[in-house]
Structures are given as C-alpha cells and as structure tokens.
Image (cartoon, rainbow, N blue to C red; front, side, top):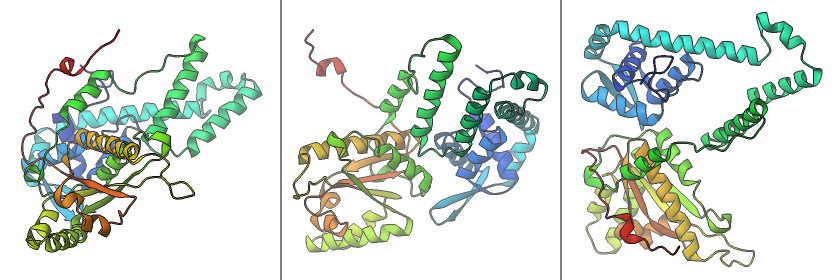
Length: 371
C-alpha cells in the first residue's frame, strides 16, 4: 500500500525501487553504505532514512547479481556501479527520475515546514505578529534548543520525540496522549523469531562495517542490571586486528598441548569476534556490590540485545562459551582476571547460507499459571 508520497506504508520503497535508488547514487560516484543512507536522508530533508538493515542487504544483492563492485578499504566496503548495473539503471531511468522527484518534493515540503516553525512564515506573518511576546520567546527557545540538540543515541532521540508528541497532543486535544509502543508488537515478535545461533561454517568471510558493530554494542548497553552495575565488557576483533586474537588462541592451544595452528585458523574463520566479559562492580572494600550470579545474568541480557540487533541488521552469529572461548590464558590476555570473567565470544558475520526457520516447542508447555 502506498502513502501520499508514493512510498509504501512506513516510509519504505519496494526492494526494486531501493535498488534503483542505490544504483542512481552509485552512478554519481563510489560510496560507502553509510554515505548512501545519509544521501537519501539529506535528499528528503530527513523524511526518508533507510536503516542499515535495508541498505546493506540491498548492496550485497546488487554485488551478487553483478550490478555493483566492491573495493575493500581496511574493514570498510566501498561500492561502485558496474557496466551491467548502469545498463539496468538506464532501462529503469524513468522510474529512477520519478523516485528522486518524490524525495525532492518531500524534502522541499520538509524545508517549508521547518521555515514555518522557525518563524519565516511569509504570507502568514500577520498571524505570527499577533502572538504574545511570551509565546514568541518560548517559540525561539524551543527552536534554538532543537537546533543545538545532539542526541546521545537513537533511544535518546526517540524519547524527546515522544515527549514532544505528548505535549502537542495535550495542547490540541486537552488531554495527555497515551504512550505508544516504539514499534508494533508483531514486529518485535518477528525480530525474536528471526534470531538464530549460527556458527563459523555458516559465515561469509566478508568484513562487517564498523557502524553496524557499533549499533550492536549500543543495543547491548541498554540491557538491565541489578543496581545499575552495567557489568558487561566487550573486546572487538576485526580485520587485521584478529591477529591479536590469533596469538592468544595459538598460545592457549600450545599450553594445552594441542595444535597451535588450529587456534590461529579459528581466529580468522569469523570476520568479527566480540569477547564477552563480566566486570563486577566493587564497593570501597573490594567486595562485590551484587552477586556474581546477578552480574552474569546482566551480561547475558546484554548479549541477547546484541544478538537481536545483529539479526535485525541482516547479520548472523553465535555466543560460543566453551573451549578456547573461555580459556584462562585467553581471558588473562584480554585483561579478564578475577573477579572479572571471560564468558565467551560472539562470532558474527554475513550469512553464507539461507537462514533456516526457527523451531520451538509450544510455549504453553513451559508455563504454569496461578490465577
């Protein structure tokens, strides 16, 4: 179903249209995935900002069908259009022009709305002049605040948006607006159901952009912890940085009398390794503020958040918590000494196989009720 601007409900273009959008931008010059997201956001003046979970799978698809090439720059991918991609774009040039026209019109309307909000009202200036000085002052104060506002993250930004929405609703309707969930419950359930634990043999060797890993870590940081201790700690290994992990794995294997080369190979078998550590909060006497059990449960919650975000971004991974992943030599090399603990590694990357559908026994068999 299309909205008033020609977009599908939820500010989304179809996958075919999104591919044409990306090819049009790549036709102007090579770009990183993050730059493509910013270009589309700027073109529509903030109205259309596709998520990394939409852009990066689309770029991967364009690469697989030969419409885009990739040049590695460190751990980052720089995409450029191929001759085949340019041919496909020319065949769909009319649709491409139509899509960009939609975004430009949206951007123009957003700018008009912003100018109106900032007091540049043109024909409606008389209405503005009749406002009280107190209201004008509050208007300027709100404008200056929003201009200088720099959210600490997406959650911080959405909290402000929700607050402003409730205030406006109360002004317009005379009563507070009931809080709304950030997304439909069924979408949350879909995220839960898509999450899979998939190991090394199912990962592509392709690197993962740092921005995506940072989103995963930000999600982990919003986990609950008893007493607000926030005991989760992470060490990330990507690209050539995996050599540090390879040295630790090799040393651990050698000390255990096992093949050291297998440890080195393992370190490079995943494009991303995230060491999962627990660093408990201590009081002034060096005693645990919360029990080790409480702190480990908090870290487990953080890893679940991280895994769910990875899944939403189109990545797969697995929390590995035995063998080398919890070896004392590896833990010591990473700085996780008592009372801190190494609880394993999260291996992560792009799927090399089709992600299987999950299976669970009926939840009703695992619940007892007392009503």
